[in-house]
Image 1: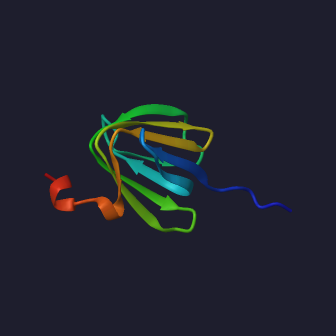
Image 2: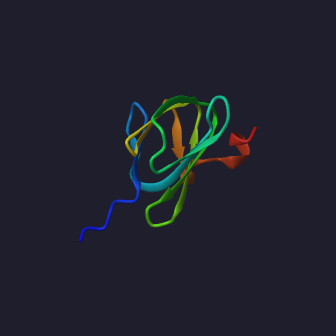
Length: 100
């Protein structure tokens, strides 16, 4: 018997490249109105994102962090797409400058 798929697909994109593509358990983002978290079977949504951090938990349980200036998130059928002009991976983030 086939095990049901229990994760979501996430793509984080900038105009220049794909920053991340893979299976995740959750995604937390800095929504324009308030931060929010997307879990499996979340209602479809399109929302704007403000400057802040994106947190993901991969299908293997690892936390990954990204920094975003501004962007858009789309969630539909357990597929999540985050588009942003400037998105940095965790190893590129200068936390002292980002928190100012």
